[in-house]
Image (cartoon, rainbow, N blue to C red; front, side):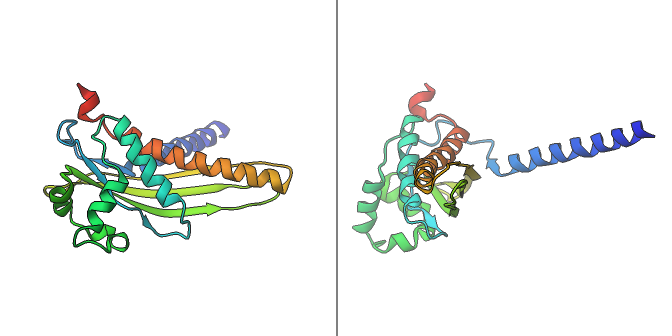
Amino acid sequence: MKIYKLQFFLIIAISVILFAGCSSKAARVAKPDFGMNTVNVIAVLPVENKTEDLVAPYLLRSKISQELYFKGYAKLSPDLIDRKLESSEMSDYAKKASTISPQFLRELLGADAVLHITLIESVKSTGIFYSPITLSMSCELRKAQSGEIIWSGTYRATSRNFAFTRKGAKMKTHKGYEGVIDEVVNKIIGDLPYGPNLSG
């Protein structure tokens, strides 16, 4: 009887693990025809911020833009995108980044694709001994010509920091904050194929 119970619990445990694994994979969706040579210039739009964190959106956009260049895509800095948009009819773009059409950015910047980023969660808890930091975000990459979503992903990272004093906790929180942002950016870039400048 004990053997049957053990087998039953093992089956349940394996089922839960398999289900969790499938759920995590479902957070990332890519079109099978996303070829390395079809996208070279990616315009990274201002982050749509659904939190009270005013620092993370800037850091995320800047780091993702840099990493795209190192991944083999053409360099297109956020500053250049901002200047172009500000000098166009989209002068109030920062509040309406999600409404800018990919086709407009293709004409304005020569972009092959547009990356939309949404900061969903940014939580920093400063305790005496334990100061966790959680960051979650979603991304959508759209073809500039058609507006079709060719890749999307949802990412979440948590940094668990321990310290024995409040001063130490603040220092750990600062380092942990940068670490969480780097982790999320690395997950995003890791999911994308290499750009044409590195794919040979």
